[in-house]
Length: 433
Image (tube, rainbow, N blue to C red; front, side):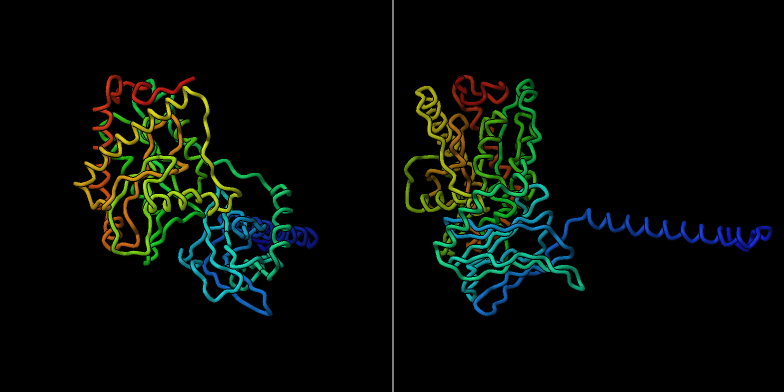
C-alpha cells in the first residue's frame, strides 16, 4: 500500500506513515543482509592457493582464502616444526604444493588438512630453527590472506619457545573424533564377528604421494569402503571403518576403536612409495618386536611417525604388558595374525601382483592390540606405474576387495574348535579379564 492511496490522511499522518514504511523496508533489507551474512559465516573458508615469499632474511608462508579465519601457531620439537591450527578451513590445493621446497632457507616442506571436526591444521617442517614473527589474516579485495611470517633463530631459542608453547594450554582442547557407527553389544547378540578396517592416514596426514598427485589417504579409504561392502555381502560379518571420512586419527585411537568394537580381526590398509619405481606388489605385515628385514623396519618406522606427521608431540609407543595371562593371549593373537596373513596371500595371488617378499613383520604400533588378530596390508607402491594403475582402477579395487573378503571368510571357517564367524564372542581370541 502506498501513501498516495490514503488521501484522507492529513499531512502529519502522511509523514508519519511514510517514515514508518521506510523504516520497515530498511529493517527487511537489513534482515536479509544479515541472513545472507550468517549463511556465509556458516560455510567454512576455503584455501585456494599458497606461496612462499622471502624478504630481508625472513620468509612468509601465505595462503589465499575466500574468508577470514581464526588461527593460532606454536613451535614443536623433534623434529622442528611450526603447527598452525585454523578454525573450519577447507583446502582446495594441489596436495603436492608443500612437498620438498628447495628454494626456501627456512621451510623444508609443509602439509595441510583436517585435524579434527571443525578444526584444520597446517604443519611446517623447518629446514632450520625459526621463530614465529607474526601470524595474521589480512583482508583483500577478493577475500583474505593467511600469513605465517618466520625468521631465523638458533636451536636454544627455538627449544625455549617450544617449551613455553607446550606449557601453555591450547585455546580449545582437541576435539573427540566422531564415534564409530557400530554397536558391539547388538552385534554380539546377532552373532556376527566384527571386522575393523583401518584406512591409513587421513586429514592433515596425507601419507604417500604419487607423482601425479595421487594421495595414499584417498586411495586406501576408497579401497576400505569397497571392502566393507564385500565383507558384509553374505551377512556373516559386520565391517566397521576406523574413520568415515578424510580426518586424522592418532595411532592409539585406531587400536582403541578395534578393541572398543570387540574386533575379531583388524586390517590396516596402506600404500607406500619407494625410490625404486621397479618394485611393485602387495605386502602383508604382522607384528614382531624385531623386523623381518630392513625394508620392513623402514616401513614400520615411517608408519609409526604418523602422529608426529600430524603435529602431535612425542612418538607413538607400544603398550607394554607384564601380566602372564595377557602375554599368553598376545602370543595366541600373533599366531592367528600370521595364519590370516598366509590365507590372505594365497587369495591375493588371484587379484593382483604380490611383492617378491610378500610376508614380512615389524613393530607397527597400530598392530599392537594384545587380543585382536591384526595385519597391515600394503596394497602396492605409488612409485610403481603398474601398481598405481591398479590402485586407481575401480575394476581392480572390486576384484581385490572380493578376494580379501574371501580370505576373511576362509580364515574364520578354518579356525580350530569354536572359531566359526556365526558364534559371536567365540569368533575372536578370548579376552582375559
